Image 1 (cartoon, rainbow, N blue to C red):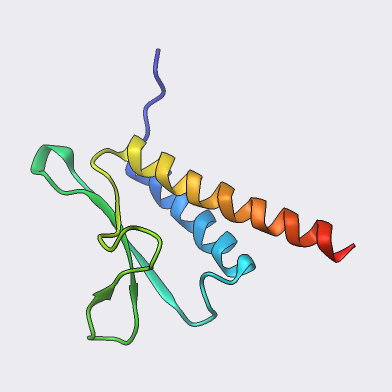
Image 2: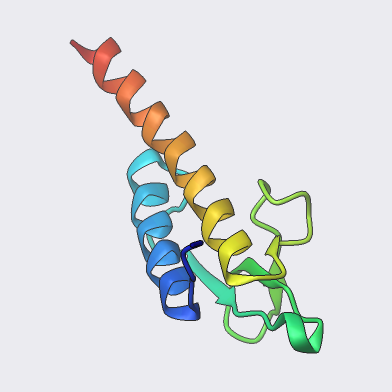
Length: 100
């Protein structure tokens, strides 16, 4: 049986991603990232963006091919967020090794 992922799971993965992004320096202090939750039934994808200033709209984060796209389902979005996070955790591990 396959595991089911919910919007809450994606929101938790997004919070962990933001935490890791700050540690690695991808997300600067004061940056605001937003998660748009999707709905496959209504044709809306899960996406992430940066908000530079209030009222200025959404901007690309630079690592999502310009669209912020994570997937059409909660599972796809959760997996994409996990991939980004694991990549940044690997960078942190390399930095720690070279600092020794």
